[in-house]
Image (cartoon, rainbow, N blue to C red):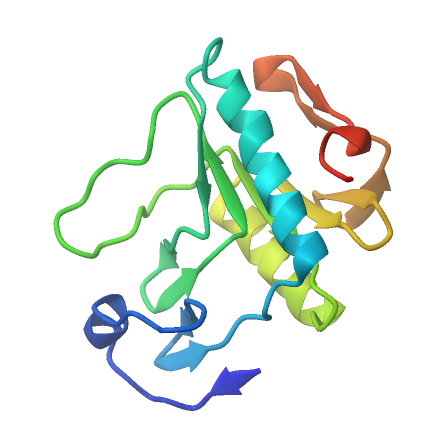
Length: 170
């Protein structure tokens, strides 16, 4: 799902899209899948989980935040979790350019797994320590290390936290 736009990165960074924000890959504006109810609810529950932790730990959860992985590559995870501090404020429209602790993608019904895997691998190569895929339709969770692996819980050893599927799925 992409629109061959061929726009400069500065124009992308100063553009607001009326329906759903888009990603940017080397001059091309790339549309994202529209979230359905299950996607939206799961994303909300993930944010609530991490926001509840803020009383005890310095975590900051950001939904759909543009991240600069490299020159010409701006991706938008469904949820990015920063620790031990919030992302550095950059003047203007510049997105954070250092990896969050966690990047989470939530599957939508029209997502193509090959494209989602590519995105997860890009987060990992950028240096994101914890890259997760959450499937609200099958109520399964995955972590991406060298490969995508289904797991029974999502763990954050740095924070001594374990996130169970029943905490994020209705």
